[in-house]
Length: 133
Image (cartoon, rainbow, N blue to C red; front, side):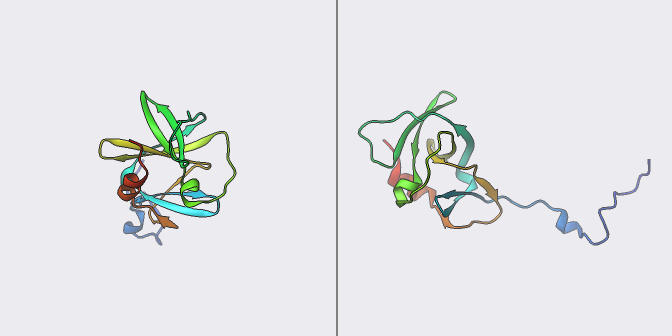
């Protein structure tokens, strides 16, 4: 073995080896892209069953049970009046705002990115407008 530094190629500068700072969780509803600041995202998980909640606004899909907690799930598509194909298995973006949680159901796996794209959701305003009490 030699004790030299590994050769990463002479055309790569050391500052380019630094990792990107992830800032956004991006997802698509219908044909629209949305971004959420990553600092509010607690987790992304697969869900197959959402339990309906009677007497709630139409944008509320229901509740999911996740690790002993009941998390309300809302639909961005219904809020923004975006038509999309409904799938049986969905992805859930779990948001933390203070001590409260809120889930956003999406059809496809969200991405993590260094840049925001599409409509950026102000999570605190969004939570204040659409949370379930």
